[in-house]
Amino acid sequence: MLRQFFVGAAASGCNIAIHALVMVAVIRAARFADELATAYQTFRLIAIMIAAVTVLMIAHLAEVLVWSLTYAAVDVAPEGTDLVYFAFVNYTTLGYGDVTPVKRWSLLGPMTAMNGVLLFGWSTAVIFEVLRTTLLADGEERAHEKRGWPK
Image (cartoon, rainbow, N blue to C red; front, top):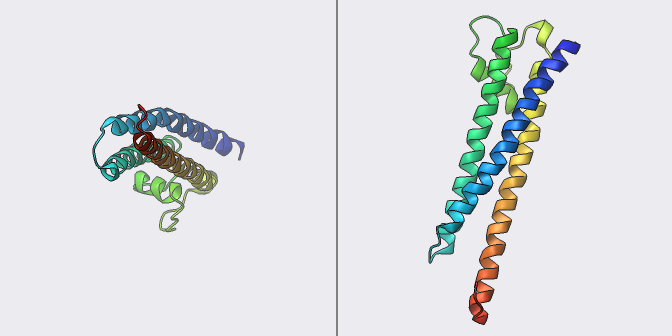
């Protein structure tokens, strides 16, 4: 059982590192999209949100691939199993149950799910913060324009 925890912790640690690095990319993408100043603030907000969510989705795909590589390395699933599908089902907590891990690696599925839930929560917080910051910046910009102040 200890081996399962170590393998799961290693995969989770890799994914947390990926997610932390992606936060830098999300911030840069949001700033880049924010610089695409347009007369239509709605389009600017849409561009920023599309950029942020797209980068986060790519991160989650990479994290699922880390789990599928982990599954392949330790031979978690029965032979012939699509490991990317199996990792996606576990990571998203969808849990179809059509593929189950071999008995000696039974804890990796729940560990994958726990990692996915935590990283989806982190992504949700980031999406909300990007939205809040963008709306706040738009509000401040409008207030400055209303008063005739420089930006």
